[in-house]
Every structure is written in structure tokens, then in C-alpha cells.
Length: 164
Image (cartoon, rainbow, N blue to C red; front, side, top):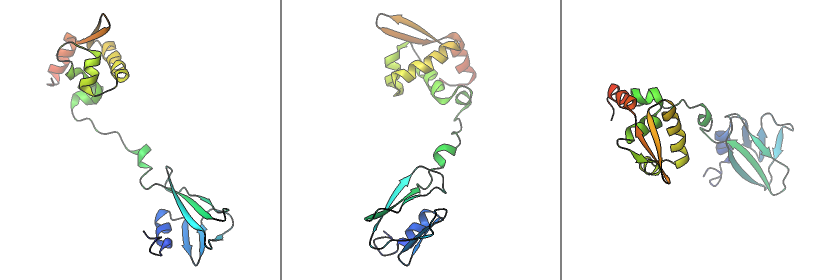
């Protein structure tokens, strides 16, 4: 909007502290050459996933100048802390496995469990492997289906945490 209304210097300055624009020229701190004349060239903005100080500029094209700038808030994608557990059982075993264990109220097939949980079958298999290793579920093949059920140990754990 700022570029359309004649204020690209405001827009570019908001993208990064390293970019300044004015008097028909462009400066990008850290790039050799100092000031670059824009002339009639268009400015193409390219958002990128990068740290807050990253800037890449293409200044040689006679038609357009392109500037890749860090997408605002992108650094939170890799630095955001994990969400806190909603309850003690989730804190102990993770929310997916806690929900999975609670979902197996009666014996059911792995595909039924995947559909109920809205999770891919491969993910259900992975988590059920871990729950079986902890002796919290049993698995039994019946023809083409694999049935899972909670163990007595799982029932005691759920009773301890009052979650069913």
C-alpha cells in the first residue's frame, strides 16, 4: 500500500532496519557499493524465512530491483517453546499418547483408532509401539486387522491420573 501511495521509503524501512530508500536511491546496510539508483525500475519484494536481520537484494536487473526480507515473526517458527501440557498425564507421556490411551476405552482396530483420533495410520502405529513397549496396551492380529486394548497397568495409570 505504501508503494502504491508513493511512500516506498516507509515500506522498505518497515521491512528491515538495514534498508533505506529516498531520493530515487536505495541503500542496504552491509552490501558493497553504497547507494543504488533505482531509476524507473520496479521494486519486487520477496518474503523469506530467515532471521530478523537477513536481507538479500538483486540490484543488477535493468527492469526491477528485488529485495528478499525476513517475514515478520519467522524467527518464532524455530524458537517458540513447546506448548505446556494441559494435564499431568499429558505432561508425563505427551498429549498424543495420553489421548490415544484414553481413546482405547474398549478393544478396537488400529484403523478405527486412527479414524477416531484423526491421525495418520503410521503415526498411530508409532505411538502404539511406544505404548506397547511401556506395557500399557496389547496388540493382537485377527486376520487382516490389528486390535489394540488397554492393559491392567494402563487402567491403573488412568485411575491414578483420573482420566478416562
